Length: 186
Image 1 (tube, rainbow, N blue to C red):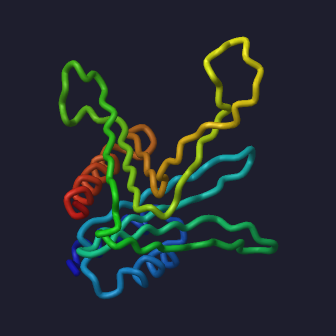
Image 2 (tube, rainbow, N blue to C red):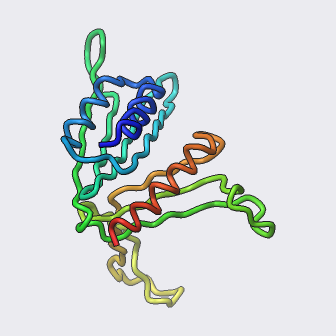
């Protein structure tokens, strides 16, 4: 494993400040003795009334696997609280699709540096989302029950970063990681 890549991952985790020892331990247990090819750290706090809920996603690419780690606040009684951490190991041969979406400012004057938002979508078949809606026959006066129609959508992982929320460096890292994952899993 490249010491510089490992050091960069550790620094990124520590910079987030969200239980860095716990997060590092969780990720490193899954990495084992494999080389870290690339990584993304995405800290995504959400706000609900007067509370902050923290969520950290770590994506690690090794020569054989995509590791997807999540750490979240976990409700608990008493001082200190709790956190839940999990890491999923996906063999690269199991990755079905990797989509990198870039949102650009002023596309008429395209510059690669104009990316203001990026989305990474990865599917490996572990989760599916069903979007249902009432079925219709097309007759506006029809009152018959036509059941439901729907779409089954693969929905394993979506990570969104923007320059406004995460800064340009993190958006660029997400794009770089996504394109590297596209090549590794094809």
